[in-house]
Length: 271
Image (cartoon, rainbow, N blue to C red; front, side, top):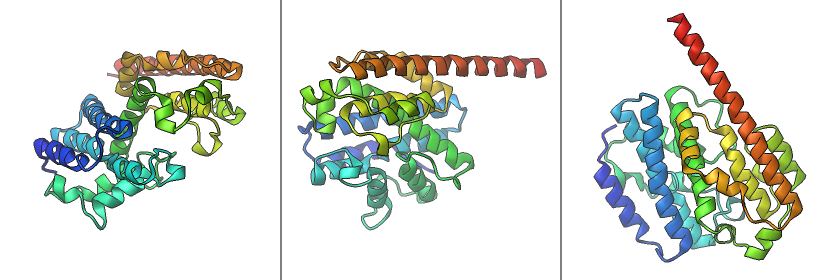
């Protein structure tokens, strides 16, 4: 696809000016968008994709959360279960009646794939019929989004994100079902999250499902996981949950690193 990045950036700025930049939620999502696009670009480059494919990955990052702005305006929340599925909502704004995508690019050749990538970015599991390069782009965007969510949870007070008081957050405990999924080394399913603390543990657990080595490299370099482990909770069950989650995630990535190193060594021997 042909892409004019300057046009995309200008149109994104124009669109987001329709919303209150003083609203912390709006400001958060504007900054998040630029970072996710940057992460998408770096991950795509690490995979040796073509310049056009890198552009596509970057564009998916720029547009993935376009539905968040209207979601905040209408519902004043980021919690999809209390409002709308923001990925579906955003894809509808881009590709259905309003056709917002036409403001960002005149090239329609990649619309179908871009729509799927955006719709899938927040799903617990990618649709099984999505394969090949489309699956790669889905994973790039999902990885980039997960990596930046770690930053958001450190830099932005969670009470602003989830509309809870600081006291409620600090005293919140962890649901046992959440920790069961942590022990399985998978992302925590939204339906088992019941408390504000569950969401923090759930966000840390997103790191279990980073697909690409570059994504983990970026996450580690940011240092936000370590800061999330040190969340100043007053609840004993949360303290224990944070410590256990840290142990599980670090053990998981040590094992993954060992596997990758053995595979690299094996590949060298086969040359």
